[in-house]
Length: 241
Image 1 (tube, rainbow, N blue to C red):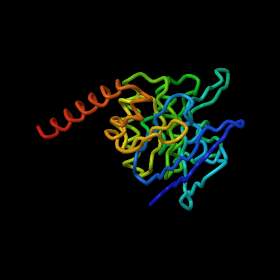
Image 2: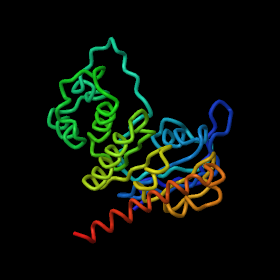
Image 3: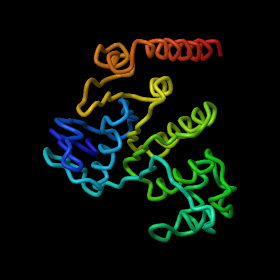
C-alpha cells in the first residue's frame, strides 16, 4: 500500500521554480534515497511531503492517519542553553518516560537520557534526533542528510541503525544523502533529482543511467563497483558459514 503518492508535483520558492513534474510513490517497508546536486530540490521535496511547504501544482496523497518522523539536516544547539536529552524529547509535546526510554533504546542511546545536548558528539546528537523522530513509531521516516558531520564509521553505524529501525518498525524511510557509495549499499530504490526526477530505480540501474553519470561523473561507477565487491564479499562469507 502507498504511504505517500506524489503526482506532477511543482514547487516554487520566492517565485523561483524549484521542483517540477515530480512523481513519487512511497511503499511501507522500503528505503528510498534521493541524490542530486546542491540546489536540486531535495530538502524542498522532503519539507513538501511533511506539509511544511505548499506545492503550486500536482497532488500529494497521504495514507489515512499517516505518521511521519523527521530528522532535519542540522540542528544548532545554543551552547548556553541548559537542555537535557530527556527534556529535548518532550519538544514539541510531552512524552511519557516509557516512550522516551523505548525510543532511546531503539537507537542505542539509552545512556544519554540525562546528558546535556550541548555536550553530545555529532554521532550521539544524530541518535538523539533519530530517537525523537521514532517516538511515535512513525509509518514514514524522513532523513535530510542525517549523517552530515559524521566520519565514515559513524555514517556506516547510522545506516545500520536505519536498517534495524526499518526491520523493527516496518516503516518506510526516505532519505537525502550525498554519500553515493553508502546510498548504493543501503537503499532499495534511488531517485536522482535535479529539479525533476532524472532517473530512478534500483541502485544498479541508477548508477549506470546516463542522466546520473551526467550529474555525478563516471567516478561513481567506482563507488558501485566497490559496493558490489563488498556486497559479493559479504555473500561469499555467508556461504562459507
